Image (cartoon, one colour):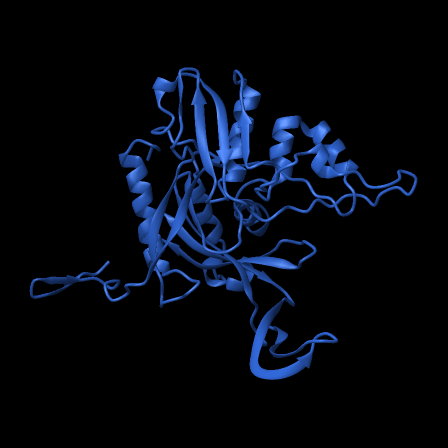
Length: 365
C-alpha cells in the first residue's frame, strides 16, 4: 500500500472512505484427511488451478466466463469467482451467487386509487416485478475469501453458505482444472477457539449453541398416503416451542442419529416442517465419533453470526465466551449504503485477522 506524506499528515488511499460496516470474519481449516497432496496447501492449489491455460494460452485468471460454476439446482443458480488476486502471500477472491431469470420486486411511486374490498378504497403504489437488464443478473449472495496455507477466512455479506464456497472450490480444483484427483475428499472445518476452551475446564463434555430466531427450514416430505388418515402434528413430535436455526436436519441427525431422523422426516405431512429449539446441548463423555460430530455442528452453526457457541467441561464451563474461532471486523464500503465491500480493504483486514490469530497462538502459520 502506498502512503502519501503531506507535511506531518499521513494519508492512505482509504482515508477518504469513512463509511464502514462490521461483518463476521469466519475461520476454516482446509482438511484433506489422509490424502497425499505432496505438500500442497489450499493456497498453492488455488494458485495452480487459476494458472491453468486454455488452448489460446490464456490462464483462468484471465477468463471470467470459465470461472462460472453452475450449482445444477432447481433454482438455476450459479457462483462466479469474480475478482480474484494472487497476493504472493495468499490468494484472495470475491464470489457472487447469481440466479438466471430471477425477478426483483419494484415499487412504482406513481399513486393510484384501488378498490381493495367492498368497504375499502385506498390509494396505493403499484408493485411490479422485473428481470435484470439484458446482459446482467441479480446478485443473491456474496462472499469474500482469503486462502493462506491451509487456512481460509470468509466474509459473507449476503445470503451465501460455507457449503456453497466448498462446492465451488471442489469444482474449481477437480472438474474445472483437475488440480487434484476427483476421489480426494476435503472439508472446510470450523475450529474451536483454544483461548476460550481453556485447560482449567477439564475434558470437554458438552457444546451448547444458542441464538436468536432464524427463518424456518422447510423439509420436502413425500405426499401423505390417503390411507394414513389426518396429518400428524410435528410440534407434538419435535418440540412445542420453536426457534429455528434454519439447518435443522443436520443438527437433529447429530442428536438422534440418521435412522431416527430419516423416520421423522418421512412422517412429516406436506404442511409440516422440521425445527430445533433455540439451544442444542450435547452432554456425556466424548468419543472420537461424537467429537467429530461437535465439529460438524460447529461448521453448520458458524453460518449463523447470531449464534453463541459455549463449552462445558468436567471442571467448569465457559458461560459467556463465543467458542468458535471467528471475529467481527470493520470493513470499508465503496459508498454510503452500499451492499458491497471495498475489495482491497477486505484483503487487508482478513490478512490482519490471520496475523492476529497466529500472534495470539490460535492457529499456526
